[in-house]
Length: 197
Image (cartoon, rainbow, N blue to C red; front, side):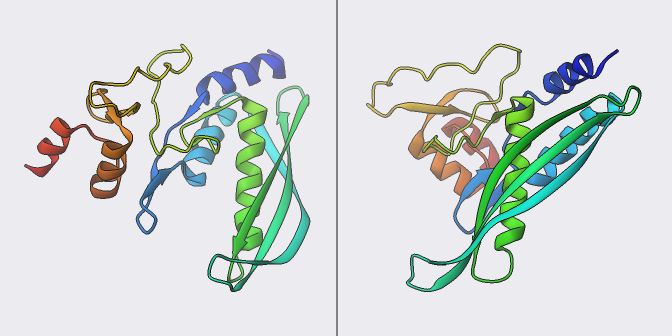
């Protein structure tokens, strides 16, 4: 079995990354690097594949924050080399990430983002926290089919933007925001009542 066949198996295993973390300060859920890398590592090692990573600091500069202060802003490029331990064959993919911090973590944040985006692009991973999606909602596919299209507007005029993490019922943005803030995940009204009990 060549590296191509093994990478197909890895891509199948890692086709979707759920939101497994909650930012309690800004009240949003996100895909953690730890959860993502653990899933990718398990899929790679199951195929006898290993990785080496090269991180390059592209830019480090001062940047103004929203409060008028100054923070460090870093941009990092990550190159990931995947090697087949059986054949020695290799594949490569790259990603770019940025990070900003008022302490010493700007480069670390950029490193993590660059690695995440390298894997997202290299393995064609569908992400729950798409950076172009202004919603905090996510879908969790249960089959190999592509994600469902958003449902039409319900009678109240609010657009369905996601689904309940417990029962799968469609929910609006306001419901998503409230339930993520209060319960740490998107829940419909009925499932919120169950969590109160």
